[in-house]
Image (cartoon, rainbow over all chains, first blue to last red; front, side, top):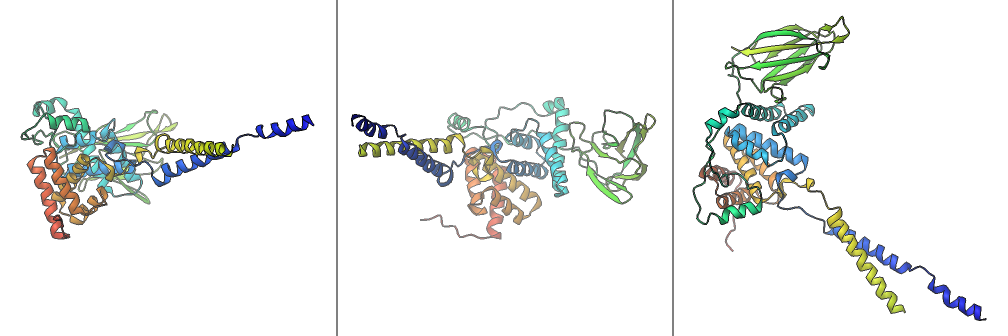
Amino acid sequence: MIDDEYLEEESPRRQPPWFLLTGLILGLGIGLLISIVISPVRYTETSPASLAEAHQDSYRWLIARAYQANGDLVRASQRLTLLGDALPQEALAAQAQRMLAADEDVESARILADLASALATAAAQPAQSASAAPPVAVSPQAGQPQASPDQAAAARTSQPTRTPMPTFTPRSNPTQLPTLGAPFVLDNRQDVCDPSLQQGLLQIELKDAQGQPAAGVQINIAWEGGLDSFYTGLKPAISPGYADFVMAGGVVYSLRVGGNSETIKDLSAPQCEGGSYLGGLRLEFSQR
Amino acid sequence: MRLLRIFWFIVAIAFGMAAGLLIGWLVIPGQPAEASLDTLRADYRTDLVLMTAEIYQQEGDLPSAAARLAEIDGSRSGLRVVQQAILTGQELGYAQSDIETLARLFQALQTWAPTPMNNQP
């Protein structure tokens, strides 16, 4: 009898506290519902670097298009810095290539390529740019967003009376665009047998009348049953006037640079080292 | 005993809720990379509007400009977006030429799609 009473008293104590677990799960569910569905985190006051990739692409394209409109490379460069790309010209070129690969507007891709090549050209001429644009103490640059609210506040507090803000006077030369209408003439054509390069690589290098790389020039290439076009300047890391195309073995191509240049015919990938691998071609053009 | 159980049940719900809120708001919030153009800080947004105005000044394509403004801030009319950009630009000390560029877009939008402006209470 004593044993029975003992068992009756002890058995409820050994039950796990299910009500606590139930409460925790219920609370967790309510908390997640509130924090994810009803009142999720909303980002405001963000910077361009934190935008979604698609919106960063829109931002970058607007910068390139605005550069095309105003020709202000310094301003475009400052704007691109806000996106936080390690190499802005590479990001521009990559976006242009993505657009071309997606069969989007070729003109839009060209706008991006133009800015990429202009930046690459400016980067290649730092000494000239430095001498052309004397250092100016600018705080903050007119028309440019400030880097952070703190800096903006600091700038405002340090200038109780508004002083005339500098305008974007320092300008580098924009893209060295070729003179419209002037034809490109083939200066050099050579077979390239380099196993480290992609097989069948057709490399094209354009220079304008001043001997500067010519970016944003359309190149049309045709072969039996096919036609393609591409632009110089999409690989500014190599050269703003560089473009390439991969040829297939045994196919003969015709190529024309720009609108009214002569058509270069009978282009084909050479066989190298007794036909062990497919070589490439290098064509160098200059504008006359 | 029963009251004690109810008390601990409520405490457990509170703990669970706190954990759920922490998880939802701090541990797995929406990524900043999901931010769109309309979440940009006012000065960045103003610069975008200025870009739109610069492009409009060159190409003169008002529908395209209006579409870009809608992408920058879809919650307000293009006219309002440019108006706000002019005010912000003046506060930030934009160059007069930039303010004029914005003003030209503003005037064009007024002509293109006149919107009743009820600024007065």
